[in-house]
Length: 140
Length: 140
DNA sequence: TAATTATTGCAACATTGTTGCAATAACTAT
DNA sequence: ATAGTTATTGCAACAATGTTGCAATAATTA
Image (cartoon, rainbow over all chains, first blue to last red; front, side, top):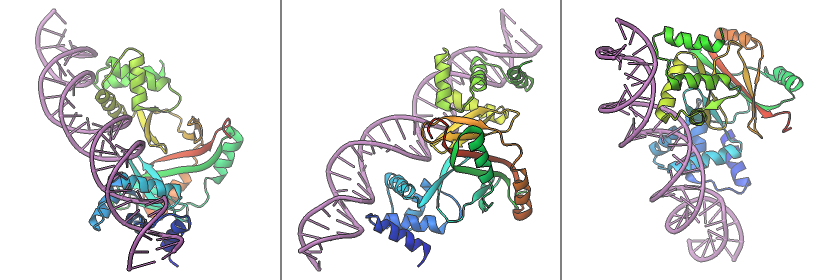
């Protein structure tokens, strides 16, 4: 079974409906390698003949976030982006010239730091966000 | 000479005017240990008897960002914050329960990773953002 | 003190995000 | 296949954040 079908299954198993818009949004987010903003997602829905109200898109994003199907990433250009939660924890390389975004996997590199933070500041880290900004291969 | 006077000097040296609002905003950002949003800054200006238009606050933040006097931080609660650029590079511990923010200094810990990114992906890292989310000493 | 022009305020707008409520459509059980 | 239930949707209205053009103001220079 494809990963995306697991997502659909999970939604139904939890007693939620698999509406056209919901399904299309998961498909869009699943297919996209880079980050998508709410309005980009809405535009893609439109492009595929599924005009959805802004409210619906936001409510659906809220639903998918709650279900831990997608996550929210805020990068420094003043926008909020969403992406499918993937098993492999990764970070982003954001090119400040061409705005491209690529993923980078870094192993469990911050774990040691997080232990240190707990010892030093008694702050229990549950999540982190790490983005790198710079020039991509083409723009450098 | 105090650090803040260096900022004022730099502004004048570059041919810009040291207006009441500009000065007050630097003072406010300089005095504040944690992050401030645009509207919080505006509220503090008002509180000190300096009512400024929203437009002015945003334009001034743009100016201070360009001058590299402040930097912008976007954390996961949907807001944009600003803080004085300090010589000591630091990150933030954001408590998801009480919304408190504390700073943490981590040494030049990501440098090695950034070198690796360059070798591996040919992406030249110029900056990064790293925030930790979790429970602070009190909330845990 | 007057002249120059950077800075400001105002009005108007754009974008993002939220809420309440009535209409619609997905699913369930028959 | 159909009817009933109610999760989901669209609409209207709003709130917050952020931007632009232009005329008025005030910080600096001479």
